[in-house]
Image 1: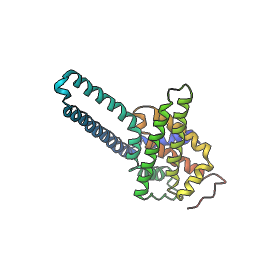
Image 2: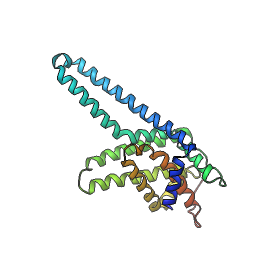
Image 3: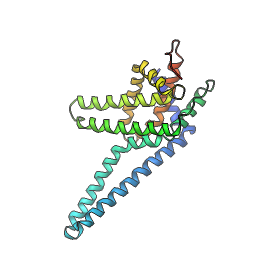
Image 4: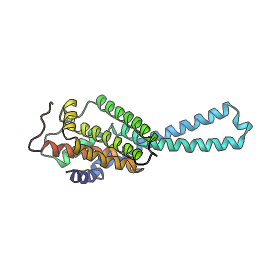
Length: 233
């Protein structure tokens, strides 16, 4: 089930129908990060100028500026997945609707979450993801335990949020959460695949769209099982 869903999700992510959403999401993410980097480097320059560092130690001033710029670049690269999740929140319902319409044309379409609720989901998810990753980063270099904690935390978060987003198009928020818990092992295994993608630079920018496409397929397949869990709508 997971591999079939993943193959279908990959095909959808690279399809012309989702390619437009993908480029808009990537463009906005990189644009926001570039603006943050420029703004923060200007703040560093202003701080140096206000303390007259440039006049007193011109070589140290230039070195500090470039080191700060590089440090900010690394920090923003770490923030990239969280920012991409927030940006993708604008488009995930549209992406889910495309997947449902093209891969499940005979099924009734889902209903979009209200825009405010959808963005609240995205902001909450990005915030929790960032906090968990910062906590996991503290123990990341502890042999075995650090890597396992980092991977496991992301697998759980990604499986929970993306599956519930897909399921909430057909069930209440509580119903979507109940379904995810009922199929916890299957959804967690799908989350492991997404967590593996999140580790890969650049590829992690595609993870939000791939994740929602994957979980739309997972939800459809699980909902079609012979004895589905009873859920409120």
